[in-house]
Image 1 (tube, rainbow, N blue to C red):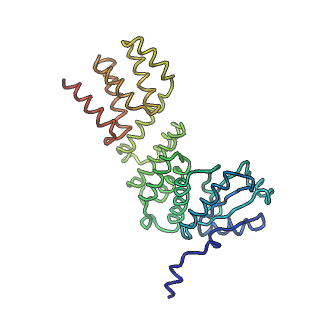
Image 2: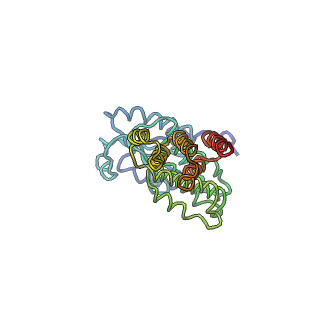
Image 3: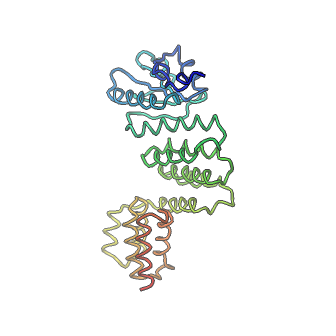
Length: 311
């Protein structure tokens, strides 16, 4: 065996090429049957394209053959651009096994490009090997990073892929993937979709802590109504109106200000812990569950709540 040939990186010309409508089927659809193909629709006059294309080329080259890149000049391939419904550039599609599986529009940071390419590489690995031969944890870590970076659509695709190839519906990877998929729905404001995603979990695993945390996030997110500035003004003018103050705390939590929400609920609990069957304490517990047991706001809030309860 020629070890030198076996370990040699693919030539750049094999990884990155220009395509036309005549070569699209061969260079994209056929080629995607064996490895994901990224298609970069660009134009000479497009400033963001000049930023994005070199970054894509760099990420694809570093992937060393896991994915390839095809560049299509829309001005020279107007019919193809029309068929692909390209309305602005840059537009990037990823094809795998003959169909589009991911994509984005506009220039994005290098970190998101790296995550995008990594996700496609992982997708190819999952399709070509049994679940036990794929590092599902690494795929999930990449999905978590994508979601944290604002790429909810890309993260959702990765979570869905892991859920599909998990060895057993109910194992740790499956549960984490479903929880992640629901979080993607939450990130886009689709709380009904988040609940639907959680519905695929077997009954025996429905009370998994990770899923309970997501349910708490859904509950908080659904309380997003109300203008916070107005609620603060009204609650400040009428501090004994606990219903209004609870609405303020819910709005703060829904907008991501969990520290402010906990502060408001602790003040309510200190003033009247029994109000509305301890509604302030129960709402704090929901926030703690949504954040998770190790979150700094959970740890601090629990200490302060315990201090009030046992004082």
